[in-house]
Image 1 (cartoon, one colour):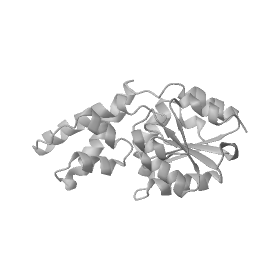
Image 2 (spheres, rainbow, N blue to C red):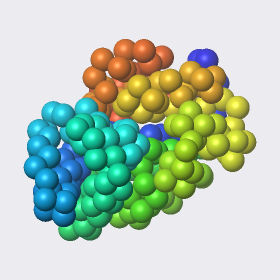
Image 3 (cartoon, rainbow, N blue to C red):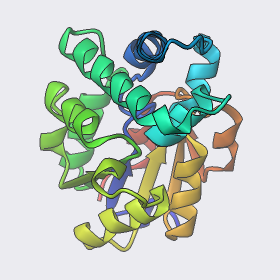
Length: 221
C-alpha cells in the first residue's frame, strides 16, 4: 500500500507515543521487590536492558519473563503491582511522551487523517496515559488488550479498524507485534526506530527516526 492511499493512522502507544522507559523500568524493579517481600522469595531484580526487551508484551507475558523460574500461580500479584507503580509514577509527573508527539498528531488530523490507538497494555494503565498526556481526545477510536483478554494484538488491530470502518490504514509501532499485525490485516506498517524494537523494525514498510517524520510520509489527504 502506498502512503497516499492511507485514510487513517493507528498508533501503538508504549514505545511509539509514550516513552515507557521513564516509568516502567523503575515500576518493574519496585514490583519485584514487593513480590519478594510478599512471598519471601529472592527473584532477581532484572536489569534495565532486560526490562526494555519485554516492553510491548502483554502484562502476563512480561510477568512470566520476569519470573523465569516459575511461580506462575503468583503472576497476577506481580503484574498488578507493576501497574500500580506505573500509574503512581505517571501521576507524580515522571512519565513523558516522545518529542513532538502531540504537535504531530494534531497536524496529521489537520491534514485529514483519522487517528486511532491500540495497545497491549492493561485498561487502567492505557486510560491513565490517555488522560494524563492528553492523547485520548485526539483519537477517533482506541482500545487495549486489557479490555479484550485473550485477544492477540492482530485481533485488537482488526477490532479497531472495524470500529473505525477503515479499509486503508497505516500502523505505527515499535515492536514486532505491530509490523506483524499490520501485515496480517493488510495495512501499511511504519516502524519507530527510536522505540524498543531495534532490528525488529527492519521488516516494516517504512521507518522513522523521530515521530515528527510522519509528516514527511503523510503530507495530507
